[in-house]
Image 1 (cartoon, rainbow, N blue to C red):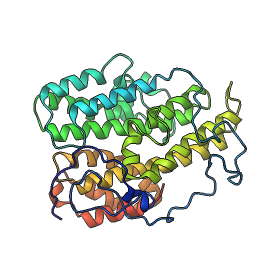
Image 2 (cartoon, rainbow, N blue to C red; image 1 turned 90 degrees about the vertical axis):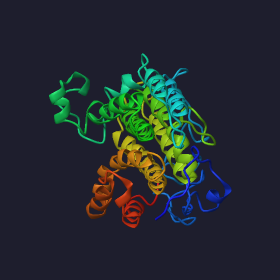
Image 3 (cartoon, one colour; image 1 turned 135 degrees about the vertical axis):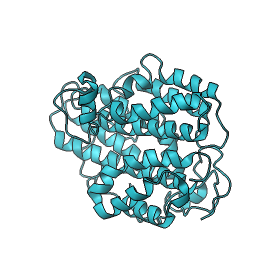
Image 4 (cartoon, one colour; image 1 turned 45 degrees about the horizontal axis):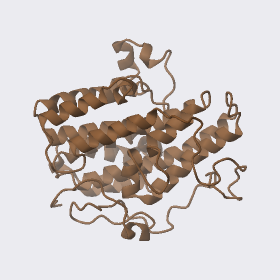
Length: 354
């Protein structure tokens, strides 16, 4: 399929998207409002276990977020500064566009990433709570131990090497568009696993719920977006709404489950974080879908390969055969030989709804 033009920055929601329940067929050009997998209005009903703010029939008791707003535990949420840092990096490296960043841009962006208590300070210790815990915390492991527990120690084992090389190569003028796309995708990966991690550890530290909310929303209300939520909302308002409800589900559980101490009802926590994770996976899938359609634009394919690989765990659990098809297409190092029908068919079948 021929690709003409390139995305001029992240798209914004449009009435056309809203008219199809947030999902519209993708046009043939790299338009700013390129959308996602076709999904007719009403084709993605809620899971019956979902928390729905303000509902009297969702099976959830009344709680603090029934007004539809996230109510932080803390007046100051440090994770918000890391989302702000991401937005600064995105502006410097012109994520999603075809304007070529300079070597100096990569140096500036790397300084923001590496700032004290910044994004880099969390990437090096990030664990993926989708996988069982290792014998000890990843931050206490040596390099061989980290490599042996790469899925759990996703930050130091997988995300950090991508970022380290992409920042260095970009600073040296090597494949600037491709390396900007790799950085974008790796940071979105970090925010995705971080939101899930904070939803999990919130059981012992209630303030981690705030970090979860920040890592997805950037502190913005449902009607706005920043960071990861900016990407999801622009491409699928439906996925964004469901993700926001997932944040509120976790906060509702924590309001009901000993909010000043250690939570005990982990079954309800898991119900809430599953709701959130399902929506976030759909959100990642629509980003991958859009960028795969624009794979000939600049370095877009390199970002698709990074972010698409994040979906493999859930894809394999849902349908191993379709996951293998998706994996095979994403393994192609250049966009030239990609079978678009196979890639999109597998992606849409595996992640049809939030």
